[in-house]
Amino acid sequence: MIRPVSQAFNGRRACIVFDLGGVLIDWDPRYLYRQLFDGDGTAMEHFLAQVCSPAWNAQQDAGRSFAEAIAEKTRAFPEYEHLIQAYFARWTEMIRGSMAGTVEVLSELREQGYPLYALSNWSAETFPLIKHRFSFLDWFKGIVLSGEVGCAKPNPRIYRIFLERMQCMPDQCLFIDDSRDNIATARELGFATLLFRSPQQLRAYLQSKGLSRR
Image 1 (cartoon, rainbow, N blue to C red):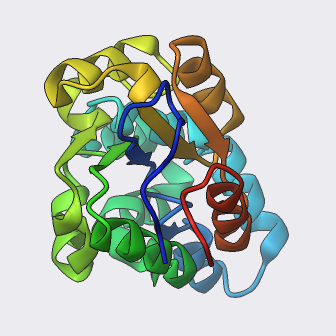
Image 2: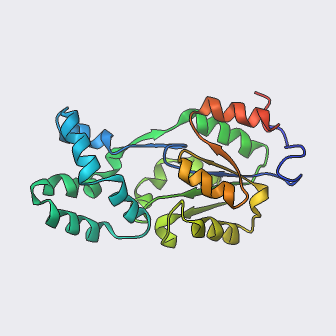
């Protein structure tokens, strides 16, 4: 059971801001590429570090189209063409499902009337592919996606876009994310923050702040 916050976040009613991937949605390109590399973990990790790397994927999160990204990467690594193309063509296979424990906490917060928001690094091309799979995405008062605004966390600009669009003040907001860099920027801007590690850790933190009695 979640109860109203008391004397937290400057005494204002808390706005709870969730990251999506790694917090509420279990996304990992390895779920796809373990199949494509037939269990060769070393080759898979090399591909995901040197070819379709996190830095490469981050550019799509920030607004670059997958068509442009895949064409550029295929020119550089023609020997991996079919694997590079799979990154978008079979992208939905990188989603295992929701993170049930976190969704349970989200549901409790919703039942008690806390304003819920999402601020996520996510491509504008891939989010529509999975939005229908997760009914809890409809619980948010607002969602700001990096791919739609053209910049990604930890760039301070996306946090300011979020605050302006949602008409929130940073000291009203608890921001929950699994990236240290993203958390650091939010904290510098005045958000209360939690570096997410597990649903159990999230619940314990909420209890410590008077947000949860469970």
